[in-house]
Amino acid sequence: MPPTTHVLATHGNRFLLDGEPFEMWGLRLANALEDDDHAERLIAHLDEYVSYGISAFSVFLQGALTGSANAFLADGSLDDAYMQRLARIIEAADERRMVVNVGYLYQSRPAPLDPLAQGIGLDQHTNEEIQWPRDVFQDGEALQAGVANATAWLRDRGYANVFVDLANECNDERYRQTKPMYDLTRPDAMRDLILLAKAVYPGLLVGASVFDLWPLYRGVGDASDLILMHGLPARIKKQCMRHYRNKPQVENESGNMLGCLDLYDAIGVFTPEQKAAFRLDAQEMSAAGEHWFLFTRWQQLVPVHFDLGGDGTPEDPGVRWMFEFIRDLRKERAA
Image 1 (spheres, one colour):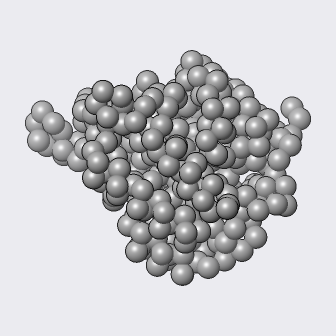
Image 2: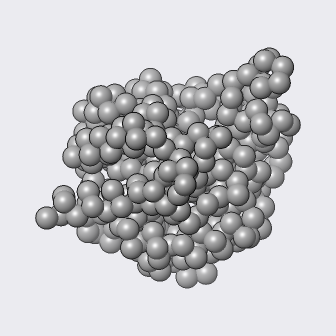
């Protein structure tokens, strides 16, 4: 298989693509590997994304909430059906000079038996703590083999328009239930996985996302090539940017602490207050030099809406208003 045309790298706290400065505005599309239909619908919308200035997006080998994807088998080998989808997506992105954030592990994979309980600490019906099923990995060595195999797959295919998020929100306590064979919540254990991936594919940009700063400061950040954060308030993100001045800062899941997300019972619908919070944070962090991946349930929950929809009202749900705002924000910065 021929390698990708474009090469992602870093220089200090900035990204380079083919040696030129690259501003990463992305989308979190974590469930894009759910099935062939999802993969093909994503590819069909890439040109539209590019027209709005979107330059990157994420997909996860273990998907995300409401999805069922799991590209890993018990011994850490890879399920070929998922990897074929990923190959088509990465190569389609490369044709459009886009970057793909390839995520590996997800804290809620496999999903709980009650799909309504996903993402909630207590079961909606019994008010008892959810018991999360155990992942397929037969032991800790198999999980490490999975990380090595996925990274070798990227290396052997020559994919260079990518970076890796090894574990979505690696400090999430659910990992201790779904992946008890390897405690990803321990910063030293996560650091060792990062170093493993970097050894398998030198030059690949590798990190692990967090929703709190302590795992970064206790080893994850120092081992990473880039700092991956989820939904932290602007003041906290700026603190992290001051601490890691020579690494790019990427919020590859925006919005959790802003309250600007569409809700489970109102997918693609945002209040005026939520829209204002999103715009304020986007402006502030764009000015500070952070790179963003938009996260909405509109573009994450299965079946995923890869279309943009409308202006985020009950009459016209969607996220097009976000795209329009970011497009205009980038134009203002370039002027």
